[in-house]
Length: 251
Image (tube, rainbow, N blue to C red):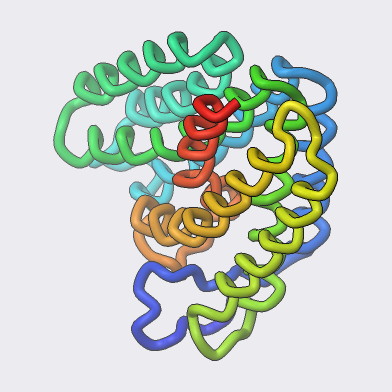
């Protein structure tokens, strides 16, 4: 892993161990293929991804893996609660709202204190994963635009941010990549998104995607912690739900 820049705090220190670029490309290809395969396929893929991320968060907060602070029911509730959100989004926003409420109530029943905080902490990851599924109700292209824009941000952030001397270089490169991809979508104007929707999505992703990784760092502990499953979804945590809400109102 690259050394952590002084004062980086919750800024992400990219994990460069292993074939990260190839794995990122595989993840991107899988999300696009699921998007074209249909809403159920996309929901299952995002649910599987956020289930792995939620399990990773719980294990990071209990490094002993079998100790007293976090018990197995907490792990189960966290995984099922987060994974239920993309699946519920496949049925619509009302079902997603109900799943969120049930997840919060389940968090209150796992023992309170730190355990409940950990369970609640994974729910933003679930909402981020649910966003493309919600947008798929508007059309395949709506979900596709969000996934491509977020992938563009992640690629720019990782390629430039890895080994950068300052914490802002990676996010700045990611925003620049979003601007390029967003311009392409405004030219193409895929229905029902069209030029206005594509431009709106690009602006929202450019503004909010850089805030997702630091928020995910808060969930896992800090920006230097290795959390490969969480990092597959972190850029969606804020920009995903906001973009889905705005495009649903716009379109």
